[in-house]
Length: 80
Image (tube, rainbow, N blue to C red; front, side, top):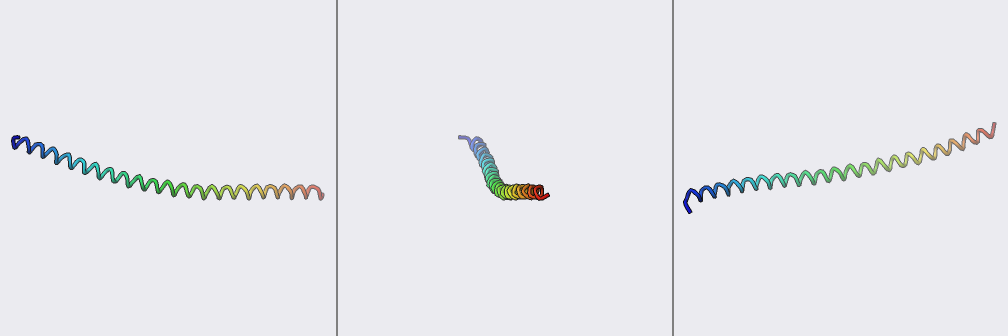
């Protein structure tokens, strides 16, 4: 194998190694971003569950208050 051909093959291999190293670094960064996004989504879902619980409690209170007001008006109507 001529020396020039060997040098060319070595240069190609070095280029491939650099390219694969860059791709590996990019893949690692993408995995880290993905893991961070998963954590963010989990936090948002937890917050949403808390807000949903609060809204449900407010709805129950409103319904109870409405029933109490209706009973009160009914009582006032009969005492007139």
